Amino acid sequence: MADTDKPKAKPAATRKPAARKTTAAKPAAKKTTAKTTAAKPAKATTTAKKAVAKSVPAAGKAQDKVKEGMNNFKEQATDKARTAAERGKDKATEAVGGIGKLIRDSAATIDESVGKQYGDYARSAADAVESFAEKVDAKKVDDIVDDTRNFVRKSPAIAIGAAAAVGFLISRLIRSGRDDA
Image (cartoon, rainbow, N blue to C red; front, side, top):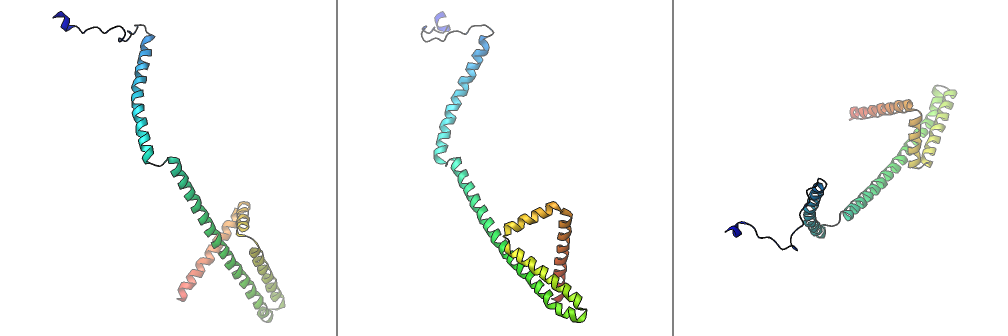
């Protein structure tokens, strides 16, 4: 019965060598254990990743498609904004030219009612307004935007004042339109 209580000894070739009981050997044994433990889940994870990679397109391809789509959207938006700005520039040039013509037409009336000197002022103002309209018409939208940015950087107080004045005029125009209706 004594033979059944004790485990049987394995042959020397199949036994693992006994770990030494030195202080340096213990940390090494722990590291080895950690590595072997970590290695097993890595194989399972690698297999799972391969299975997912087969069923899902690569992330790089999806990102490239998204980037391409965003670039196309950006180009379309830029083109539409540029087209709208060109139309706005044309309408503004036409309106400013119309104001110049209106001032020039009023110069004869001003000559008769106030005096020739004031009529000449009106004509020179009409020339300045029409000249401004021609300059704006000759420039591209990008050049106008760059000029505006430079002007705002050089004199922000004037730019803020001009924006406030334009806002006031627009609000007055809107109010007068409501009163007429």
